[in-house]
Each structure stands twice: as structure tokens, then as C-alpha cells.
Image 1 (cartoon, rainbow, N blue to C red):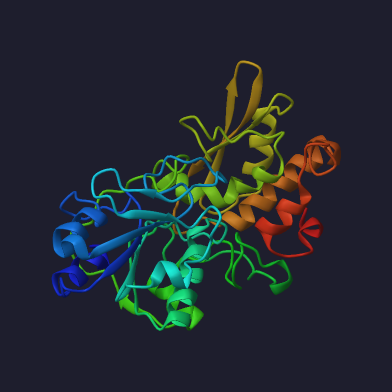
Image 2 (tube, rainbow, N blue to C red):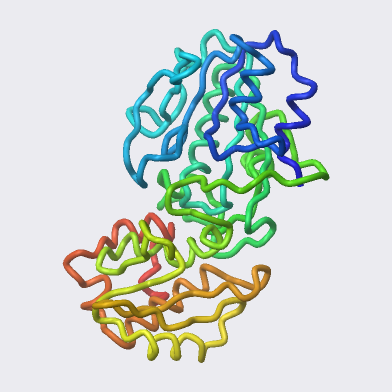
Length: 326
């Protein structure tokens, strides 16, 4: 399916003064980035870019605050929405005729592009400014998994009552939120190349496995090879015996996933193999892994460990009773 921005651009009035929330991962089927296509269509009327977590150029690490800076070629501001501000202010929207959102998302609640979309829609509604929301294919479309976020656990990584894997494109999210927007849905045709939307989501498989292993952010004693080639596909620690843990997990017959031993010098662990994308259930898989770790290694290796961050786990799971599930 072709990104929705392409059909919208063909009919867009070049006299409009536009702000674009996007990043370099948003490619068109021509190979251009969205911003390049907007610059060609609108010229100087592309007044500003807005950037989510990881920055417009996708180089900032997870959780790293970014700052507003000028575009190195065009001189227009790239306003950071992951620094001092998380929501566009009226001053930033002044002088624009509309805002367009075109982000490569992955359909997972704790991936912060969902929160940035929601806050941008709210800001535009408050300013009386049209917001065009463009769809891109996501790896888990139509495959939700997990309970809805509890309102008492809402945060920037759980901004609304969607499940951990919500499986919705951005126009579907905007419609579900009930916020004013102009939809630019996918259209039949060729698909644009998938460019990593953040440094550790290197391909569609990593994006699909991410919600099954993201809980390791709350357990820093576990390694998901975030900076390496196996990011989100593995779970390692010096004390894990990979063959035994993989055997435990495979005995459960979890849908769509197979576990393999993953061993390297000084470290043992497991590697997740996505065997059936449609059958895979990341929420179920995540808590099965946690239960298996707890049975083999005890609470002292998990959330009673001095490095553990149970408060962050509450934000990721977005339910208050997650401990009961392990």
C-alpha cells in the first residue's frame, strides 16, 4: 500500500502555509522523504518542521531530549516535540494554514509517536487549525494485543486507553480518539521502503518483536542488544542459561513465536524467532517470558533487583496489577 501523503500532496494547494510533523524515515515511493516532497510542492510555504522522539534525522537515542534547530539546507525551524515541549504551542502554530502529520509508526502504545500524534491533534483543535493525518503501513496492522491502558496509568508512553499493541494506523488512531483531522489513508499501489523510525527498530521484524521484549527497559540487568544487530530479538544476561530457558518457553506453545538459545562470550539468553506474524501475541509472550525467568531465577533477578525500575514497568504495562500476571 502506498503512503497516504502521496495522494494528498497531488491535490494540495501550494499556496498553503504548512507545518509538517515528520522525520527522515517517512519515505515516498519515489525515494524522496516527505519533507523533500513538501519542499518541492510548497517551496517557502513549508514554514516549519516538527520532530518526534529521536529527532527529525532519527539519530537521537531513546529518551534523549532534542532541541529546536534550523534545517541545514532550508533554514526553516525543526521544532522538537521531545524536549522542553511535547505539544505544539499556539506561538509555533501561528502563521500556519494547516499541519500535516506523516510519521512511520509501529502500532505500539509505548512507542511515543502515538502520544506525539495525540498532543498535536489536540493542539491543532485548540488553535482551530486543520490537521492532515497521513497513513503509513505498520507491521502489526489489525493485530491488537493486550488490555487497554488503565486511565490511572496514563503517561507519555500510555497516552490513551489503547492496548499495548493497538495495530492502528494514524488515521485510525485519530478517528478512535475522536479528534478533528483530515484523513489521508493508504491507497492501493507500491509500498515505500521501510526506513528505521528509531535507531533500534532496524526492520519490520524488530518492530514486531519490540513489544514482547520492551519490558527489559524496566529491568536494566537484562540486555536486548539495543545497539547491536539483534535489537529486541534477544534477551540476555550473564546468569541466564539459554538452552534451558528456550526449552521452558517452547514447551508453552506460544502462538507465532519460537525461542532459540542465544549465547555469546560471558552472556546467555534467548532469541525470539517470529514464525507467524498474524498469530504472534506480544503481550502474552512478554508475560510468559517474565514468568519463566521468575520461576528459574527468582524475584531477586527481576523486580527485586536493585537496578529494577518497577515504576517504569507500570508505565509500560499501563495496568496497576501487572505483578499479579507474573
